[in-house]
Length: 316
Image (tube, rainbow, N blue to C red; front, side, top):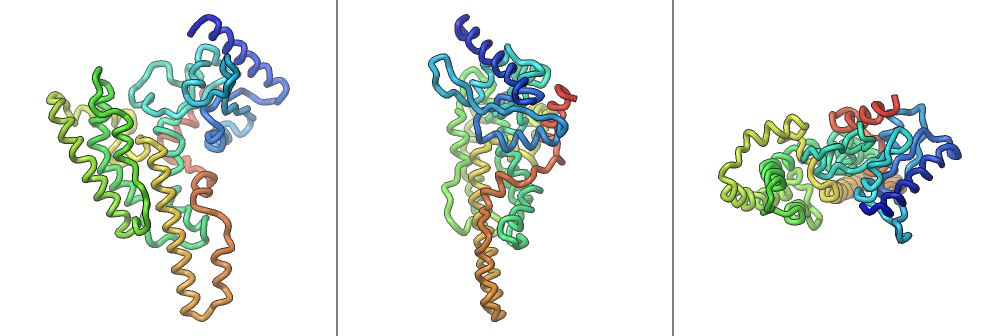
C-alpha cells in the first residue's frame, strides 16, 4: 500500500470511529457488502445484546468509487481496534490458516466459507418449509441430503485444499466451484435428491483420480486429521464449500418442496370437499428464499459458536 493510500484509509477509519459519538454505538463493523448485514446483526445480537454496533457495508476508494468485498475490509487491518473491527467471509482464509485473520487483530470471520453456509445449517432448514407455507415437510430430509452431499464432496475437497497449498495449482477455484453448480429443473427432490448426489459423484470421480495421480505423496489420512482439528469432517463439508453454490441449490430445493406441499394440501382439501379452504393455501406471501435469509439462526454448532465467542472476546 502506498503512503498516500495508507494515509487516506487511516483518515477514513478515524472518521468512522469518530462517528460513534454521534450514533451511540459500541463500535463500527465494516462488512463486505449490504447483504451481510442481516447475518452479522443476528450474530452480534446473540453475542452482545447489551450493545449497539454500526455496520458499514462499503467504503469509498481514493478515486471516490464504491468499494466492497473482503479486500476492501482488509485494507483497514492496520487501523482496527475495539472501536472498529471488520467481519468477513472466511472463504479459504480459515482452512489455510492465514496469519492474523482472527479476533486478536479485530478481524471477525464466519469460519464457514461464507455466511450463506450458516443459513443452510441442516437443523435450521428442517424448520423452514412450515414457516414458509404452513405445512410440515414430510417429503424431503435436508439432514440426510446434506450428509450425502458432504460425503461425496469430501474426498475431492481435501485434494482441492492440498492442491491449493502447492505452488502450481492443478484444480483452480473456478473449476472446483463449477463442479458444485447445478442448473436446476423440477423433480430434483425425488428419492431425497438422489439425482443430485448421483450427478455429483460422477462429477467428482475423474478429478479425484487425476489429482491423486499427479500427487503421489498425497496422504488422505494426514489431510483428514489436519482439517478435522479445524472442524472440517466428512459429515459437515457442506459448511466449508463455496456458500453461493450451496445457497442457490438449497433455495431451489426448498421452493420445490413448498410448491409440492401446497399441491398436496390442495388435493387433500379437494378430495375432502373443502373447496372453500383452498384459497387460504396461497394467501401466504412468504417464499422459502425469504425465510432462508431472514429466519432465526441456530446457535448450536461449533462454527457459529466461534463467531459469537470472537465477538465476546473483544467486547465482553
